[in-house]
Image 1 (tube, rainbow, N blue to C red):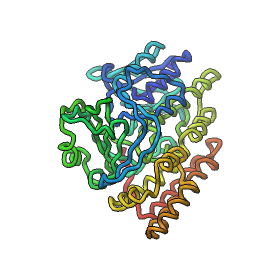
Image 2 (cartoon, one colour):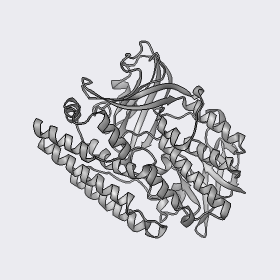
Image 3 (cartoon, rainbow, N blue to C red):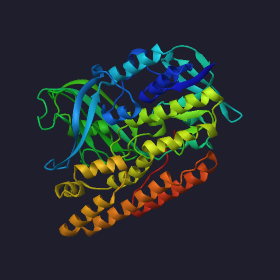
Image 4 (cartoon, rainbow, N blue to C red):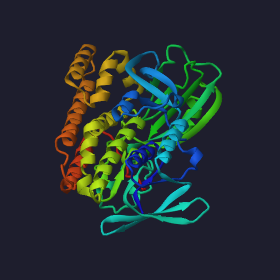
Length: 455
């Protein structure tokens, strides 16, 4: 019998396990990969250092490949750019994962590597056990007081829960981006002008409904993380687009390659229900606009695990005494994330001509983009300056669209910040209001949300 079973040894699962084990709880960590492959995940590898500061985690230099001065956003023509200030790092994903794993194991976490979750037993409104199968081996029945789903964008645990549990919500296909990326040791390094920045390229031809990126992995600019994302349900294959548009541009030895699915939407209606919690991609704790999830996942894991530890010390966790996790996450990141989901849907409708016009005419500068990213809103200063430029340059339709976007970002902010239920009883009616608001907004801007996922 464990205090907690954590499913998935990505960043969220590892950090949740580490926090709980550090407080003396008996934790089982279930992961499909072999131990030596934990941490090996396809992603952009970049994270803002403020996330580590928020949770008080100091990572060793040995797991940092490169440091950034900020982010560059380039127009489709690549003739114009915006520089967004902010310190960030490129982590070695395997090294980072193995470092977190070692710390967790040193504190007593029991690892079930090469195990897949194959069943969930629910009795009297609680998960009583999960069944995990070892690759090429038998099935084990793991019992715990609480279970955490940190298994990724296609959740292994949440999708097996009763459909009437709010934590089991099924998203839309367009709530995801399909991504492919390669880490390449280049024949010719990147320019000195770009080597100190995480570079994002807006181009709907290369990355329909997403963007493509080039993140240097060393000071010399000779190793880069290059990839792209396309909106889910669009029919585009990110690997094909990479081969067609980017492979010749970034010639060299491929160090690592792979694809994956990234949630780009607001968080789950609730991260907790009964004796189950969820973090990371499984809970959609990812920035909807840029798809970055390492930092917000660690913040969510810290909130969930810290609160859970306090509850476990006093008794058995349930929906009511775990509810504060939602309130804390919304305050830390979720309200902004929900608001940015509105902006994400609008941006996915823009064309290359729109992006070039916006960046060429400096509708927003680096500080404005930073404010939007930090606050998750189109503030009065930003809207005022944009309105002035649009009136001078003559794009009244764009001004009208931005006013709609701002209006709905404000509505969503109010709904999540001020009207989120303070207890579980109101969550279903509140979630219905969220769906109605997003449906209304999607119709207004002509965004087709597509079907819900089948898993």
